[in-house]
Image (tube, rainbow, N blue to C red; front, side, top):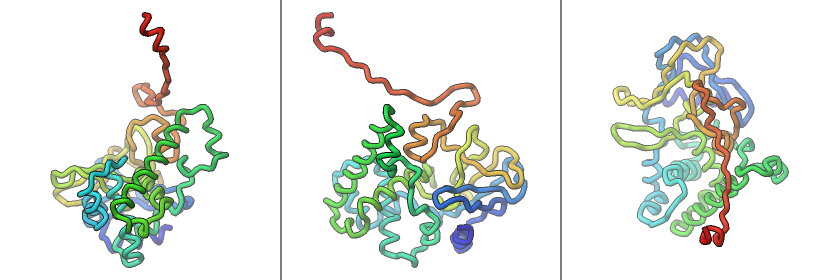
Length: 275
């Protein structure tokens, strides 16, 4: 895996002199510091040419058909990123500029509940998360069928299973960015390998001066230590559904716990009218 990642970085001139990769498992990832990194140091810099953006998906033949249609999609920005990845991989294969990046993406996402077996899902019995998983699966299926209805050729680009894979790859890895005054979302090779930790130890942005996506340290990171990103303050159901993990002690520095518990409240209509 490490070799694949270096193949991806070098041709694209992405710089990361202070970090390296652990080999992990096929579905896990992590970035570790090769040297001690001082605070306020740009430790990762990815050129704009290496980013996959919403606009790139919109410019594909299938993306253009979606734009002129009246489709109501579950997550339009995610859809266009998915369209680009699936279309580019199918059309260009190993010749794609992004082929080295595609090669290091997990082939399966077994850590995500969307891909769990019935036996594994049974461990969530009583949890509202089961409803959310079913809703997500249904939304993905509806999006796939809707796209195929206005672009039948898309069925030859991706199966429903591949579409599901792409949806969760994008869901768990995309960055919302402001690029040259335009708000968009992007897949950022290398940067999407950082694991989550709060309070945040790094910050990321798109630098207009260098035209690069950058990650800057907010504190000193020791040699060999993992370099973390913050995925934001989220409830554990969102972490599990969208990223495939939970935070055991999901509590902010001020003591606030962002976990949520949905409650269904019912009212008897007759009693309400009498009251």
